[in-house]
Image (cartoon, rainbow over the protein chains, first blue to last red):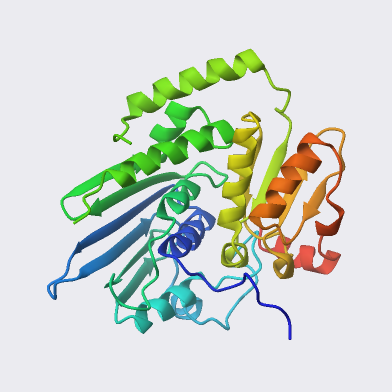
Length: 194
Length: 135
């Protein structure tokens, strides 16, 4: 049997986000907005809600149905990547933790994806390493604009790729990436703990 | 850590840049390209990237470019990393855990020697052609 040591499907919330934002970039989106919100749920725990919207090339009804099928690939939906399992993984995860998942898309206009799930569910993806993942969302090649709105209860912060690029000069070099990590981590630490 | 403002970030960058100019390291032409497709992410490419950035920063090699791209067609060997620099062949390394990433910085980038056990070739031509079809 092949060793599976160290290998797993997507595990943390950040890993799903990395995959999703890459989909938007590959769909030629110029503006991607991502909202990650943690709020009190009516049942007393927390709910994690993510909304991702892009102005990429969008999908028609047929393609939309097929991208959710893990066994479907046309070999061209990911130019630079040979497999695309991001959406099926996400849908499967959300459904397994009693969450909600909704995607809508209009060709030539863009795609909007929203999902939420109870943060306290035993199988919910942990938020570990969210700072690293957020940093990585800004560092893909290309000229896309990305707005991240992060909220936890009554606190929050906003990140804009163009602004960060302007301040740091570039997002490619080790020097800039270290500073970006430090910046995002200070934002994340400033969030309310409850 | 207090919440930083963009202005704080700008100042910090200025200070760092002055430091860097003083040391003027000769590492502007090193390119590290990490594969971050679905399978790369699933295999832990994010931790690999983090290890590269931290190790390079620790050694003051702050001008090295660390880029993230989609898959390179070597899904069985993820996380995969391509290293391009002067005086060294262009190499794709596979199964690059954070520990291997630190070894690559130490041995390949600083020491200019290959990390033999992790070298992978590019995928065969038909796979590359398939991937290209979508571009």
